[in-house]
Length: 112
Image (cartoon, rainbow, N blue to C red; front, side, top):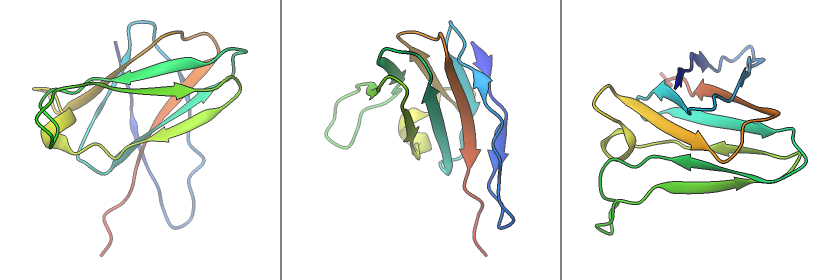
Protein backbone atom coordinates (compact mmCIF):
# COMPACT_ATOMS: atom_id res chain seq x y z
CA UNK A 1 0.00 0.00 0.00
CA UNK A 2 1.39 3.39 -0.98
CA UNK A 3 1.02 6.50 1.17
CA UNK A 4 -0.01 9.47 -0.98
CA UNK A 5 1.24 13.00 -0.31
CA UNK A 6 -1.54 15.53 0.25
CA UNK A 7 -1.52 18.48 -2.16
CA UNK A 8 -3.24 21.68 -1.04
CA UNK A 9 -5.27 23.87 -3.39
CA UNK A 10 -4.20 27.53 -3.35
CA UNK A 11 -5.82 30.71 -4.66
CA UNK A 12 -2.95 30.87 -7.15
CA UNK A 13 -3.93 27.44 -8.45
CA UNK A 14 -2.71 23.87 -8.18
CA UNK A 15 -1.31 21.64 -10.91
CA UNK A 16 -1.63 18.32 -9.08
CA UNK A 17 1.01 15.65 -9.36
CA UNK A 18 -0.43 12.19 -10.01
CA UNK A 19 1.03 8.88 -8.84
CA UNK A 20 0.48 5.48 -10.39
CA UNK A 21 -2.21 3.59 -8.49
CA UNK A 22 -0.55 0.92 -6.34
CA UNK A 23 -1.53 -2.71 -6.90
CA UNK A 24 -1.90 -3.18 -3.13
CA UNK A 25 -3.99 -0.01 -2.77
CA UNK A 26 -3.29 3.53 -1.61
CA UNK A 27 -3.85 5.58 1.53
CA UNK A 28 -3.77 9.23 2.52
CA UNK A 29 -3.83 11.09 5.82
CA UNK A 30 -7.35 12.45 6.19
CA UNK A 31 -8.61 15.51 8.05
CA UNK A 32 -12.09 15.46 6.51
CA UNK A 33 -11.26 18.11 3.88
CA UNK A 34 -9.29 15.93 1.47
CA UNK A 35 -10.54 14.67 -1.89
CA UNK A 36 -9.27 11.77 -3.97
CA UNK A 37 -8.88 12.22 -7.75
CA UNK A 38 -8.70 9.10 -9.93
CA UNK A 39 -7.81 9.17 -13.64
CA UNK A 40 -8.39 5.98 -15.59
CA UNK A 41 -6.33 5.99 -18.78
CA UNK A 42 -7.13 2.39 -19.62
CA UNK A 43 -9.61 1.08 -22.16
CA UNK A 44 -11.85 -0.55 -19.56
CA UNK A 45 -13.86 0.64 -16.57
CA UNK A 46 -12.35 0.08 -13.12
CA UNK A 47 -13.76 0.16 -9.60
CA UNK A 48 -12.26 2.10 -6.72
CA UNK A 49 -13.24 0.74 -3.31
CA UNK A 50 -12.91 3.09 -0.32
CA UNK A 51 -12.72 1.18 2.95
CA UNK A 52 -15.29 2.20 5.56
CA UNK A 53 -14.22 1.54 9.14
CA UNK A 54 -17.46 2.35 11.00
CA UNK A 55 -21.17 2.37 10.29
CA UNK A 56 -22.81 5.05 8.18
CA UNK A 57 -25.68 7.16 9.55
CA UNK A 58 -28.06 4.32 8.62
CA UNK A 59 -26.17 1.88 10.87
CA UNK A 60 -24.32 -0.18 8.24
CA UNK A 61 -20.57 -0.53 7.76
CA UNK A 62 -20.18 -0.71 4.00
CA UNK A 63 -17.39 0.28 1.69
CA UNK A 64 -17.94 2.85 -1.05
CA UNK A 65 -17.41 1.44 -4.56
CA UNK A 66 -17.06 3.97 -7.38
CA UNK A 67 -16.92 3.00 -11.06
CA UNK A 68 -14.46 5.02 -13.12
CA UNK A 69 -15.21 4.62 -16.84
CA UNK A 70 -12.59 3.88 -19.48
CA UNK A 71 -10.61 7.07 -20.24
CA UNK A 72 -12.58 8.81 -17.46
CA UNK A 73 -11.96 10.31 -14.08
CA UNK A 74 -13.72 10.81 -10.76
CA UNK A 75 -13.22 13.02 -7.73
CA UNK A 76 -14.22 11.27 -4.50
CA UNK A 77 -14.81 12.77 -1.07
CA UNK A 78 -14.69 14.47 1.25
CA UNK A 79 -14.37 11.67 3.78
CA UNK A 80 -15.68 12.42 7.28
CA UNK A 81 -12.95 11.11 9.57
CA UNK A 82 -15.22 9.29 12.02
CA UNK A 83 -16.42 6.94 9.27
CA UNK A 84 -13.45 6.56 6.95
CA UNK A 85 -10.24 6.98 9.01
CA UNK A 86 -8.34 3.93 10.20
CA UNK A 87 -6.34 3.90 13.46
CA UNK A 88 -3.56 5.91 11.76
CA UNK A 89 -6.03 8.58 10.46
CA UNK A 90 -5.72 7.29 6.90
CA UNK A 91 -8.38 6.62 4.29
CA UNK A 92 -7.59 3.40 2.41
CA UNK A 93 -8.65 2.46 -1.09
CA UNK A 94 -8.12 -0.40 -3.49
CA UNK A 95 -8.61 -0.84 -7.22
CA UNK A 96 -10.02 -3.56 -9.48
CA UNK A 97 -7.13 -2.79 -11.88
CA UNK A 98 -4.21 -0.36 -11.82
CA UNK A 99 -2.83 -0.35 -15.37
CA UNK A 100 -2.90 3.26 -16.67
CA UNK A 101 -4.60 4.48 -13.47
CA UNK A 102 -3.20 7.55 -11.70
CA UNK A 103 -4.30 9.14 -8.45
CA UNK A 104 -3.86 12.27 -6.33
CA UNK A 105 -5.01 13.37 -2.86
CA UNK A 106 -6.01 17.03 -2.89
CA UNK A 107 -6.87 19.08 0.17
CA UNK A 108 -9.28 21.96 0.29
CA UNK A 109 -7.63 24.72 2.37
CA UNK A 110 -9.28 26.02 5.50
CA UNK A 111 -11.02 29.32 4.72
CA UNK A 112 -10.36 32.26 6.98
